[in-house]
Amino acid sequence: MKNFRYLIFFSLMMVMAVSCEKGLDPINSVSPGPDTESPVLTFNNPTEGGIMRIGEGQTTVTFTLTASDDIELSTVVVQLDGTQIASFNTFKDYRRAVLNVTYENLSDGDHTLTATVTDKADKSTSASVNFKKFTMTAYVPLEGEVLYMGFEGTFDDAIGGISPTVNGAPTFADGKLGQAYQGATDAYLTIPTATLTTTKEFSAAFWMKINTTPDRAGILTMSAEDLANAGYPAVQNQRNFGFRFFREGSATSQTIKDNVGNGTGETWNDGGQVDPSTGEWVHLAFTISETTSTIYINGEMARESTMLTPVDWTGCDILTIMSGAPRFTEWNHFSDLSLIDELHMFKRVLTLEEIQAFYNAK
Image (cartoon, helix red, strand yellow):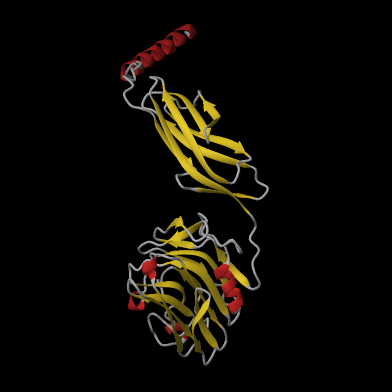
């Protein structure tokens, strides 16, 4: 009887195995077909025209590239400035490989990274990227300086390490020094103002290359939202608090202006004119003391306006860079498509000599 039970169990197992086998397609090898496509090569880091910023004491950089082929990769050879620095001939995924190449003691300056990828059919693809490398020194802020943006491939503040909220798609372009912020339609940066509003004094200094399309735009804006819930009148584009630094005019004459709110009213400073048709960089600065709003153009005072009472920062919790949005869009002061570079901000009033030093710095 025991043997009979074993026989029944064995028979059932055989039936199940046959049934399962009938329900499955046999596994057959499939030919990959002819190798008709050339391999593809992409540089992930650096990119064309990019900048590699290396901190002091850091000696190693890492280049990253992606190689792929429709059938199978054979080799990838990487060169830096004409000298081979790496070679690969084995790949975990024979059709696609993300490769990291480390290199020590890369000198500051201009460089060319070249790679050649070859597939099993001896078809090859070569590509190159040109980039710059420089060593970053730690930025030492000046007295009362609370924000510095050099825009060297990053929007971050070099003093507090603040990463702004990036709206739209601003980019980078050749600047007054290194790279600069390149404006775009509906693009601007916003940062919290906690370190900027601790005093009744404020200053900013920077370089701009003005794009007169559009013919008006916000540059730096620190405005309050509608404060009706706090007992103030319900007013859009509230100008009784903070400041608005902006431009408006034509293709040959742009007026740089400032508006400062004191809580119950506002002070206008109609500034001065610049001619953007020259295509030159212009240095702009403005200061807000407890009694005066002053605008400087290319190291010289353009205009000052007397303030009856100091600036009121109520509700001014964000600073907008390169737009009036979201809180000062009156008279179409939206995003600025210009270039801005070397942006410095202070919680004190800069002197004329200090502003001239920024203008004359090489």
